[in-house]
Length: 502
Figure 1 (cartoon, rainbow, N blue to C red):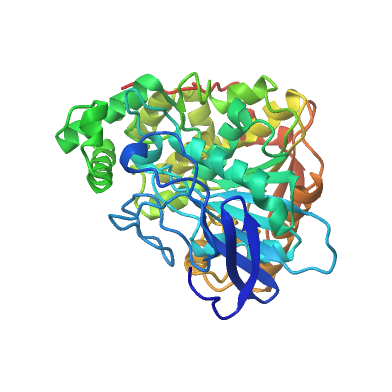
Figure 2 (figure 1 turned 90 degrees about the vertical axis):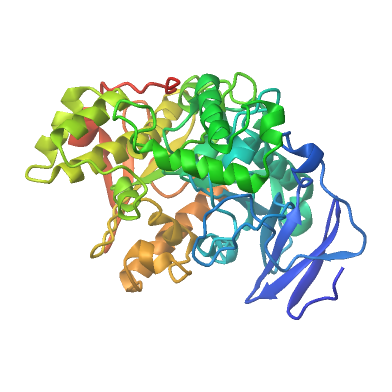
């Protein structure tokens, strides 16, 4: 182990050994703590295995390696072939006068189940720690390593990693000043989808008390569809879609083959399952780790003891279109193709034309797709959870500025209090002004209060009413979602809980 670095905080004792991070401005940050063994070699494609044990004090002043991926995100580390210790957690610990245990906020990053890491600058937990939380974030396996179907091996390995990290929290967080009985699991996009899965999974029961899920994607797979995706990836890589064939590929080769399959998905006919959505990995309803779509499980009351706070942005898909991540549709025929592919009633799609008169087809397409993929699914999680006897709260991010719409991921730096993080100015449309900083303070406070008490500051959803908090500048708006013309369009629309194999 290295010598104590300048600005080092005190050492913390974990079940694996002592760790020491860095102290700065009243918060000690302890980074890259292994919670499981490197998932490669004989452990590849298996569930997470017990992590290493060390003597002395481990220097934890830098983030750990990230899961195999091709993404290069602003300010975040990239994956390098040979990086294997990818299962680690980070902890932010505030200095305080009293010795009482603090609520724990556990963050799961997004990235289409394919990329991303806990080291992204807008996920820094310093501001939330100063608000009175012990903040934990984790790296988990993404892409094929975490969510690819491998015959004879467990599906949903990325979710199993998250559960292992939560067990690490239960066993170790008291040493950092946290309360293992008051854990809130939170995430955005694929991280929000992971949160919904964790609520529905028996293996995660009792590991957290509350849940925050932003922009939960309606993206869950059958085993048949996951196996079909594996066959396409294996064919692209030139191997058999068997365990031996897939194990013969390096992580780098699997990443490359997966990227090729995803890139070709938008060239398929519009009736194909992945024609509009190039995300090829998602949690699999395998009947064991995840028994069904989380919406169905939550509607059955399986997680009624967990308090739930959900949020989505008003214009989710404009950002994904701006960065070239989704198929572009500019004709009425293409919009009808989207409705057919998603199984949406034609009357619902026609209703958007009445709600958005005079707007281009592209705008209506992005609105329909964003609401189908994120907005309506997220909203129904809150409503179904409340109807099943749980406590649920609903919010929407409505702040816009110039060309920056209230789009996917724009809410995250506000809630984390990281408006000046690398990459955040692009998401929010420039340097934040006083109104933006005030909004960030309100959103961060709602997260902290919810994690501490289960109350974010506005009324809960009930069987008879759906109050929604709209985050906006200069001030927020509380309204009744049942009076919304948009929600009226969706009232009778049914989701296909799982997409068929294609």
